[in-house]
Image 1 (tube, one colour):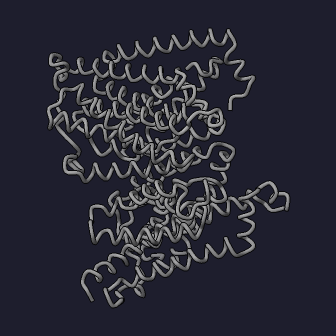
Image 2 (cartoon, rainbow over the protein chains, first blue to last red):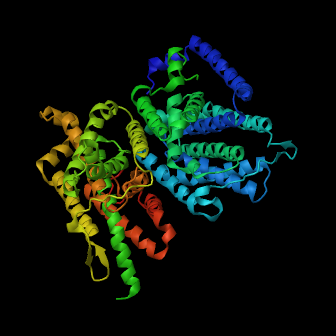
Image 3 (cartoon, chains in turn purple, cyan):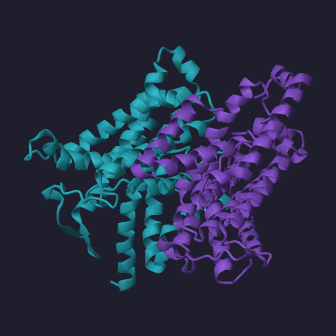
Length: 327
Length: 301
């Protein structure tokens, strides 16, 4: 969709320079915000923000950079939370190993789901991922180890590397912050790699990418696995933070929320999903007193974003600063 | 009769009863998708709206107006509620969806998802989230019929027959009449159809109204069977999506046949392994994707 003039404007030397500066500022702001957050917010709330931000960033790799709308990402987020919770609680895995197990599970699940879903394109892709995620939801509801409606409770936080007590809120916070920054850096690296460039080529024009000799399906599948795995990383970490895994994490409404976070912040921007996640989670937090009207507000935000605000917040900022593609 | 066969037939009938709703909803979805290229996520919520309108007409409208004796019953609701849902659908099309036709169809999916959340949220707020029974079932449809292998509720039998007529009627209108021919022409080449002096935007709006009206009608039919709850459409729409992936959205008859048969299969699964009954449709979708990715009735795509 990018035409030549726009492309030339984006790659002009002064834009490149300005882009680098603005991006540097954003990185600095992000790291500073992550580091000082516990001084300003409740640590648990700050950790919740980070987990959802990572979830949204992982989701954006698909919708924003590959052009695939997955409506089933809650399956990876919630599924990983259950698996991580189980190995931490019942098998007594240490925290890092537990989180990695959840992440690997989500990646493997992503491989299966991706393999099926990429057999259809566009809107069907969304419907298939939604339906497959519903299978995971029913498993979470019916399997013996998940605790059914109550969820999986009493997951121990344990000791990091056998030494650092994660039941201390600040220790836990900085561990989650490290997980988030690593996940974010991975996505950033992927997007800016040759692999990421091919993904964006698929987003812009799939038949052309195909005719240039790229094995489009393999690229899509790999992007899906990566995105699912990182969503699983976010879900496992959330299970460790809250010490339980619940059905809410695997419900289709969660898949919808992560779409909203990404859309609101800016699809296809690096920093947008983080901003979107912070806003959506904060909104839910502030409005928790008005009960089901939260859903109405979320739905209304969805409608407003789709109709009026498709670039999202960071996308609009990038446009105003004329640094498209740098944020 | 062998008790096993009896059991299969009985569960099959109950499954067929669910199949009615799969068929009517995927039919409406297919009609809308065919002309507008929009996947209407709100279809489940509009089905819920239809059921609630029937409930409100019977139980709430009278007290709201201060006329406690006023109960608008099932038969008037069967006409009024779908019309109201269709009207609501047309407003959505005219003022919201119409702005998105030039964009990627995922935006209209997301828009209708947002509408779903709003509708659900509003109804959860005013009505019991766990459901309210619909008290207005007409006396003429109460009681049971002896089918030979089971006693089957008269109302459910009525629903099956009635919906088969509605589905067939829809197929007839779209595939065999002049109106349908114009609709199909509008799908193929809207510019050319416009050049013939046909008001395509109006046609699109009416089609969306018709499709959503079908969802409303299904909702009214469902009200006396299931309890009327704000979440009744939410879980259904995901099953409907799987039905649509299995059948392929290209064909009206395909949507109907797939809907009824999947209901039947789901019912029969209950006989053999009950816990699998709520995932069997999704598993069938997986098999179809592996064997025939374009769907059973889908053209290449």
